[in-house]
Image (tube, rainbow, N blue to C red; front, side, top):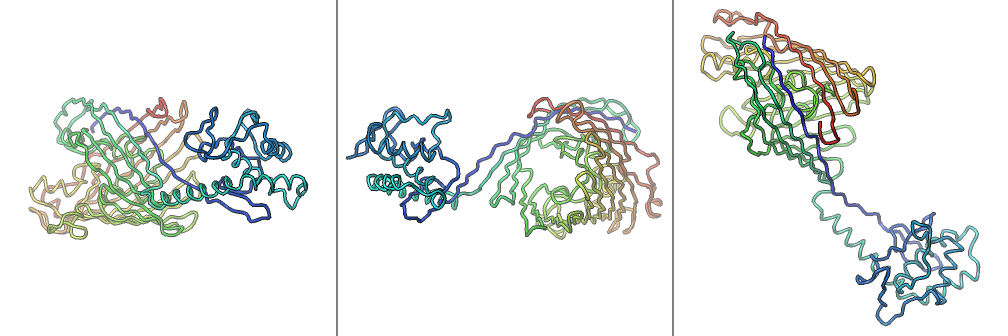
Amino acid sequence: MEFNWAGSWAVSSVLFGILAATQPAQADELTIVEVDATPSARQENPIDILDVEAISPADQTFNQVTSVSQLSDVQPTDWAFQALQSLVERYGCIAGYPDGTFRGDRALTRYEFAAGLNACLDQILAQVGGDGLDPGDLDTIQRLQDDFAAQLASLRGRVDSLESRIDTVEAQQFSTTTKLEGAVIFSLYGIAAGDRADGINADRVTGFGHRTRLEFLSSFSGEDQLLIRLQSSNIPGFGDALGTPEGDLFYADDNGSNVEIDALNYSFPIGDKLNVVLSANAGASDDFASTVNPFLDGDGNSGALSRFATRASIFYLIEQSGIGLEYALSDDFTLSAGYYAANAADSSPGAGLFDGPFGALGQVAFHPSNDFELALTYLRSYGLETGTGSTLSNFGSFLENRFGETAAVSSDAFGAQMSWQFADWAALGGWVGYVNSETTKAIGAIDSGAEIDSWNWAASLAFPDLFGDGNLAGIVVGQEPRVTNVSNSLERAGITDDDDTSLHIEAFYSWQVTDGIT
């Protein structure tokens, strides 16, 4: 039995987005001529239109206004100014400034005055058919419209031009929303005590490394998502030091701190019930199927630290490139299915999309509420392993190391997973999995059809928001994949099942220091 320890902290996601939206203008045809200077022509509440820099000549400011060519400013003492102010007071058609003042003691350009007049007309029109208009007010409005007809017409042209330019931008833009998410894990890890799988004392090793990710999330329709993920990492697994993948960290990946495109996938809905995921690289089961471990499966950024405790081992028997489907059978049932190939881009014999290692998954999940979920899962794979458990349970690698030849191994895996948040402060989870693996061709002294059976299970408790919002504590106890039975041809070659039962015990506490640091 090996005892491994690892500590980590992570900088959580940093998000930003760019949004663009517009609302089409409306036009009402009534006896009184009106111009749309705002996206909605008829409003129940007064409108604040005094910020008119957008529709005034570019060199105008609030404190110093330049006259429009061949036109004079409208002074507070002018008849038109006083007439509009009277309409404002009578009908409440201009809200004024946030401090509740109208500031009616300053001169306006004729464009600014026309904007105020137009907004006031919109509000007055809302009352036509109700209390009606005073005949005197109607005469005043008609005279104001005649005196400022040129400016009102100019406003209409400017608004139409702006709407046309906005429509062009919306039609030509590449993405409505692009968001950047980043996560950096700094990890202190090591081997505290114990022996290697071969019985030799394991070297006491302490390491410090990182995994850095930048994810670009783009949407073209608001419902789809294109994911491009860059990653750099220098954290090795424990396999070389221990002779077994037991205890490996989920985020262990050593690419020499080079930056590479780690993941590329595109997801989109078809109708209201079906969601499709296309993965070109680094696809995984959780892209399209629930792993039924909501608190512990944080993809390395949060939750459990180890590969085994993050999700049930059978979910690792599918990876890389392919297609995943998720279909809502009803409000309570979801069906997931997917096919991924490990070397889809390789056109050489024994590789490619259908002639090389692959994984196919089917799952039915039952979720009658947000607090409970139960799933039954089946996987068929060829040439893939869980990367957890004993050396023998990773059958293909075991045979290759023993005989020095490439092994052809297929597997059938079955699993049941459950998660139940029985209180706001606690959730219970667990799974059980069975894998049958067999050789599809002879290797060394092993005949084709040689089989092994392995089992794994786990039980977990999670405590969200423990001692503060955003914190998380968890404990996982389980058995990593252990071979319980081997076929006769393996026994004749001196290969027997795993004698000892390995026990995985993991506990963690995640403290959210700030919104960005955990």
